[in-house]
Each structure stands twice: as C-alpha cells, then as structure tokens.
Image 1 (tube, rainbow over the protein chains, first blue to last red):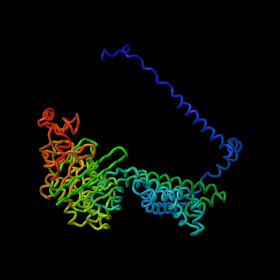
Image 2: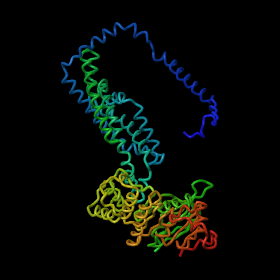
Image 3: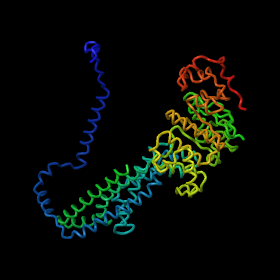
Image 4: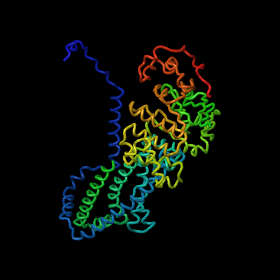
Length: 270
Length: 281
C-alpha cells in the first residue's frame, strides 16, 4: 500500500445532510398507503374472524373435494382441448388485428390525430373484461365456444396493440432512415425497418398472452362461452365437489404445461 | 450536368441557433466532394437536407437534385421519393437492419425501383438478387451474404451499406461521416470503395469527413463548413494549415493522421474566412 496515503492525512468527509424533504415525502407516502387500506376495509367487507369462526364448515367443505373423482376424465380432457382451442383462435385473431392497430398507436410512426383515437379505441377494448364481452357475445352469437373466441379476440387485441406499440416506440430509428433513403414507401419502411426490430418482442408478448388467454378461457365457460369452464360451473352449482376437484386438477396441469412450453419458446425468440 | 443545386438554404432547430445559414452550392456530375468542419458545423444536417430527410426553413431555400426539386421553401416536394431512388445515403452508424441478412439489406436498395407490392413482400427476381450479389462482390464481402448484418464488423457493415447504394443504382452518393466509427484500415477500404464507385461508375459522391487527410487524398474538391455556413469551397490542395486551424480551433492538430507538425506553423499567410470562399466553378 502506498504510504503517502494514510488515514491521518485524509480528513473524514462530512456526512451528507439529511434530506428532510425526502424523508417527509416517504412518511406521507406510507401514511397514504395505510390510509387507503383502512378506507377500503369496510367496503371490502373484511371479516377475518369469519375465517376462524367458520373453520369447522370449511373443513367439511374441503373434505368434499377428496378424493377427486376422475370417472368422467375423457369429457374433462376433451373440454380442456376445446378451451385451449378457444384460446388459440382468440389469440390468433387478436395478433392479426394488433399488428396494424399497434403500429397505428405508435407516436413515432403516425401523426397524433391517428394514434390518439386508435389508442382510445384500444383502451376501451382493454378496459372491459373478457367475461363481460363473453356475456355480450353469448347473447349475440349464442351459447358456445365461438362467443368465447370473440370475447378473447376483442380484449386481447386491446392488450396486444398496446404492448406492440410500446415495442415499436422503442426501436432504433436509424435503420428506418436507411430504408427511407433508398426511396422506399411508408409501408416498406415499416415492413423492413420496424418489424424486423420488434418481431422477437412481439412473438414473446403474443405467447405470453396466449398463456393468459388459456387461463381466461377456463372461466369463460361460466357465462356459457364453452369449454371446461362450463363443466366446472355445472359441478360447482350442483355441489359435486369431488368432480370439481378433478376438473380443477386437469386445468392446473394443462395450464402449467402450456406455461412451461410457451416460456421455453419465448426464451428461444428473445 | 448539375447534380446538386442548393440555393438560400436555412435551417434553424431552435429560435436562436441556425444549423444552416444561407447555404448555396452546386455539385457537378462525377465529382467527389469532401465536406469538412468541426462537430456541429452542419455537415450532417446539410446531407440530410439533400436527401430530403430533413426540411429547411420556410424562407425560400431550395434544393434540386438531378434537376428535380427535392424540397423548396421548407416543403418536401412530391417527386422527392422518386429522386431518392437515385440518391444513395451512407450513414455513420451504417443504418442496416441488423436482424436481416446482408443480402436482404442490400436488396432493400431496390425498393424504390420495383413495384411497391413486390418490394413489400420481399419478392425479388433472380436477376435482382444477382445484381445485389455482384454489388457485394464489388465491395468484397460477397462471402458474408447470408450472415445477419449485426454479425459483421463495422467496416464490413459500411461496405454492405455501399453495396446497397450500388444495387440501388444511385447516381449520387451522400456519405455522412462514413468512416467516423471505423479503424484506419477499415476506413481506407471504405474510402477506396467509394473512390472506385466514383471513378468507375461516374457516381457523384459527397462525403463528410472528420479527418482532413482523407479529404486531401480522395477528393479534389472540399467544402468546409462552420456554424452552418460554407466558409470554403475549392480545390482540396488549397486548404492551408492556417485555415484548418481556424476552422477547427485549437484541436485541429488531432485531425491529422500523419503528425501535427504541418499544422503548427502556417505555410501561407493567414487567409480571412471570406477570402477563402472560392466561387463554385
């Protein structure tokens, strides 16, 4: 060690002064968070004691689930396939629509009088849950999987268009300028300058949405939009808990499997 | 034939700073012109204006390329996209699409020439692909055609960008600091390639450079800019060390690759900025 640098020759630096503003700010923030929780207590009808008081009932209730009854497993599996197929079509249609909508939402591609209205439209697609859309489509096209496909399509378009446009807004503008300089038209700038840059992200987002659409599709059946949700709902309403448990296990296994596969695929593309 | 004709071009990015100030210049067919000046002197801005990628102020400035108006009075003209097909632009950062193959990037040069639907679907004929391959061969990187652009070195990417302009059939190449981010050996290769395209294909080249040596070696004519104004336009051989020192300020010696002794002592008498502005021939 260099002897010229000794601890004595260096005066200890003063501690930086406490930032009162910041500590006040964080205290206010915590006060706000706890205030918010307290305010929501009543509205959410929080009764933790009920869990304990009714513990006996809950044990009886849970007991009904065991052992799960897999007698009808062929039906469950085929309904699960239908659920996955609903998710496949809902996601596929949404991807096709999200490409143009996503680009039309991007402020680095289109002027504000285009992206503002398109963004608001996508907001409205996204704001309404797929269950609500499913209920509406059941009325419009009748009970069954097709209503579920339509519901997923609309909602997912809203979500994916936003994610796609965020990817587009983060691109490197230089390759696009390079393409423009060759005399390419606007569409070609997007096809060759923008899409190659965002494609891996787009694929990753689409797979992720497919995963979550399979999960959503399992409940769409509750409002009559087909698939395993319909079976699940029938059993719950009829208090067939052993069968309900079997259906839930099938859902858990298939959703986990799909998650693993799609995660692998997503790692491959990015 | 006049290839580039600029008159009264102004550009202000903000109210008080002019990036281009009353630029007036003409470039004839077959010339290879160097554009020099310190960072921020307006070289890139000028090149982007000629390519129609930036618009000038709305005060009467005009740029024509091959006799066609590119922009006038701050408006890009309708025919600009058509003229752009004749202009190849080379950027400091190469501006290739890094995920596409080198060959596809070079084929992009054809977009302004083939029918829009065919270009958009990336459907190129065999003869078009052959043309792109021979352009790659000319710049010496045909062996890398199927690699993704991002896997090439900087010098190779820049030569791929030149191949794109060759495929494009550009009659004017605007090169915006093409060698600023390259090592000396790659820089020479890129400059040699530009030089060959200029001599063999009679393509007019305007190249902005940081190192004055390259301007002297490769270009007969040099245009020097400072604060958005053209302060010198004439034979590169007439660039005096004193002028360059004035142009670049105190760091001028760093700009010479072959030692700084020359620049330290003025050879000719100092020339005033306005006297240096030789009228375009």
